[in-house]
Length: 215
Image 1 (cartoon, one colour):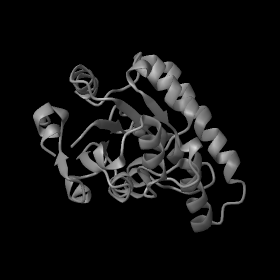
Image 2 (image 1 turned 180 degrees about the vertical axis):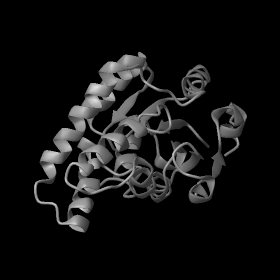
Image 3 (image 1 turned 30 degrees about the vertical axis):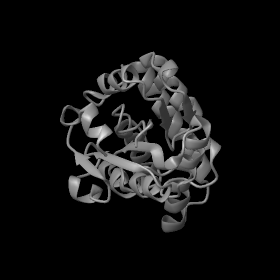
């Protein structure tokens, strides 16, 4: 029985995964590595960015990877200050509906706490989540289940009673490894890459409270 719902953030609540991958593509281009934002999302969606940068460093023999990562975040924060936060259509409506039906909500995102705080504050939704867990709080990122197990612990609800809403294959693997149900929304990758979820949707208007109750 589903007693709590855990949201990923980038690609589930907001479309900020494109801002991050765009900044990453931009900084890699400065050292002659040409990888598109779409290629980054397809390969690394759901990863902690520290792990993504480490993997790229190994693949391309990059030495000063932390300098590139710092530059990435400078670009991201500048872009956020220049524009409103792009939303996944229907995400805020779903949060409202779940809250009205008494579901405790949590957010578990691989990104850092500063970025999460900026997004939640900008959207005025921080108070809607009983627990917020960032990639800063775990040693291993998705597909390791650590982030979801920690979120379950903070909620005080058994992992088997939690539903995760994700957009990335690594997030689905993490949710299932934590013993949780998972609904995947195809905002970042195609549906065929999300088939390990309990249900795959194209948009939130396909999902009802009854669907969640019946998982």
